[in-house]
Structure formats: C-alpha cells, structure tokens
Image (cartoon, rainbow, N blue to C red):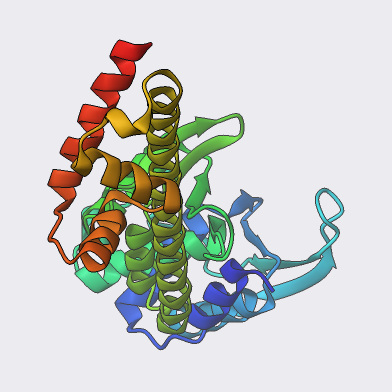
Length: 307
C-alpha cells in the first residue's frame, strides 16, 4: 500500500461538520466530476475514498449514490469505482460551487465556501482525495503534488495552501497544472493540515532518521577528508626530509630540527596535534602544535633551497 493511499484511508474516517462536508465535496467534485445529461460522475481507485464520498452525499443531500465497479484498463488495471449521482443535480452543483445560477461553470468557488479555516482545510482535503499524492519519506526525494486540469482552479488551490505558509508552487504540465511542495517540513505541515495525524507521525519518524543518517554521513565524509589531508601533509613533510637527508645530511640540522625529523619518521601518519603530544610525552618538554608547525616550515624552506 502506497503512502498516499494510507493518508487517504486515514482522512476518509474523519468526522466533520456540515460546512466542512460541503467544502470537502466541493474540492473533490470540482476536480473530479464528469457532468453530462443531468448526471454527476465521479471516480476513484480507493474504496475508502468512495465510501466517504457516498457517506457525505447521503448526510448532506440525502441522495443515493449509484456505484459501478470496473477495471481501469487505460492505466494500471486497478479496480475503479464510478460514483453516479442523478438526483438533485442542479441543487448539488450550485451548492458545491461547480455551477452558478445560470448553469455556467464557476472558475473558482465563492469566498464564503472557504471563509472558515476548517472549511479551507476541508476544501484542500477534498482536492487531495481527488488528485493528490505524497511520496513515501523513505524514497530518495520529498514530494507532494496535486495535478489539476484547470489553471484558475490551480491558482485558487495554491493560494488556499499558501494561506498556511506552505510555499506551494505551480508547474504547467502536458495534461494540466501541478501544485507541488518539495520541502520536507512543509510537506509534514501539509499532512497535518489534512488531519492525517498517524501519517504525520510516520513521516516525521522517517524524516528524523534520514536527517540523522545524512548528518552522520556528512561527519564521516568530513573526518575522512581531514584524515586524507593529514596523510597528504605528512607525506610532503617526509619528502622534504628525504631531500634534506640526501643533499645535506640530517646531522647538519640543529638539535630541535633533528628531533622533529626523528619523530616525523617514527610516526608518519600522525597529525600535528598528535605529534606534538607524543613529543611532549617522550621528551618531557612541552611542544605546542604551533611550535611544531614552525619547525616544519623551516624544514620546508631548507628543502626548497636545496631543490
């Protein structure tokens, strides 16, 4: 079962007020309905969504929804539920802000339908039940989308979503308009907006795990990069020592410089910090990292001159 299906199953059990029911049905019908010959035809591949739409129509308009079960041959051959309403046709379409009083299609719902914050959420919920999907957070990318046919409706829904500071964007596609979210936190907030709280818990647990894993990987990569840098730096110092040994002789260096050569050759992979600690312990003389670095710079100057 996909993550989107789990969210839709969860919100299909929500108890809502009459005004929320109307807003949710409006969001669903405006973005799903085929209207012909005094009949409203809706479709879904989710049995729980079908049951919810039937329930809301019965509670709000006291109409029977005829259901036809078929196969979605056009796409993936999943079960397709066709919901047909042929009673109170004009009343329903006007009440849901699909048609105006002259039976012309409304480009967007009237403001009163989504004036209340919960009705606004309900409308978005209806759109999501009809045309929405959210990637499982276990996948490689975070993504939520609503794929709508009408540009005016797409802008209207985008603005509704952005009333909750979610920063939704719109892309034009070959077959419509995609409203989408890419930010993990915004998608989590969108699921909360739908009132799918079990899905929010799952999403957040996976997201936190992924963030921790990514942080650990970044730290490991950083540590590896530091180790590579230490080894590369030590290798250069040893090469400079070899030049001095070959062209001049270590015995011509002063005591402090001979000391640093001895310990570098004994500990070829030690960092400057580690080498200063080792030398301090073994010689009973405090040698700081900066002091050690100064000696290696002098060795480099001598090697460069000898080259």
